[in-house]
Length: 473
Image (cartoon, rainbow, N blue to C red; front, side, top):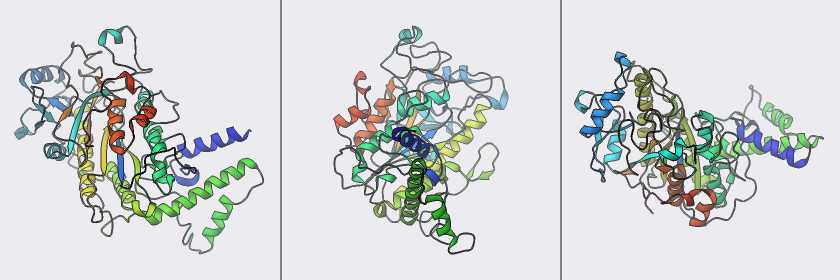
């Protein structure tokens, strides 16, 4: 095996293992040239895996829109109907009041009450009808097969398209490429890109490899700095076994990666704020709106780990960090009304918890320095398949934080219904904003220059409007 292929294999392995045993350790050289920064900023991607339904998340409620919505989204399956009451007082949708109403009225899903407050208070914005695009496209061109992204309705491929602009198998994502350019601002580039939801191409760069931790914030190789199996010396013996010198060149490379992993684990464990009353408060339970059962929220737990790392930013010497968390379950082909309500409750609970943490993290208000945003591989169809919906394309997304120009909807909100110019089948939306535009707006706030943005997003020049304006300068 050549040296190149051997190292390439180890690099790939470290990017895909979800625990630090042979992972994560990787940006050993300095990142590419970047503007020096003295402040701290973080981006947090909240990936709604499975394809969130945009039509029950953000709704147009003006009379014409609501008539179409009620007519086309009501099914004959009783409680499985995905129609919702219009009146908030009857448990219906929650009105919001964007600065630019576009001559219409809007509302959020009934479970998004906290996010309704954040929107109306100016800390949250909605970006309408975003999706994977190769170039601006019309419905006529779509039907002719022109400029259509590869494997459009495939979960894995569209997740990769969202995160890396290429179908499954892509090697670098736009979060990681941003990390490449700004990692030089961090004392240890290892912690530039951090995933709390397993492997994600979104965080992989040319030199940066995502560091992965469990949602609880714990690491796989534990106790190597303390007692192991009740014996003080056992930890040293274990470390010597798994990271000691080897004769084989491949084994030496592997041992070096493991040794760096153990060292990085020790660094992060010492820097992270503790969970609980002494550090970052534990999230409360959330209530399933369908069953009434109180349970732990895995997304809130992931965001607690993010907050614990952010709280340790000074110890880590971090100035720029990109995080990835995920909430699965959005592939709602069946029982959509109940499933989606529970997912919206989890999302709102986790967002409220994290927003509160950033407002007072160990005594510091970091809302202006931490921006979170949602992503999902695609939207869903407007019409129902009976008690659910099928894979769509364009989707609406939330951006929140103190630096967001909130209380507004960015982009043109599409017509409600089917048969319109953006309907590519069963009411699935043809996107009018590209992922690149959405991402480039975040990258500009994060500190990338115009030329750096052009490097990270090579297709951006095909679209008018490189900055959508939802972030403050």
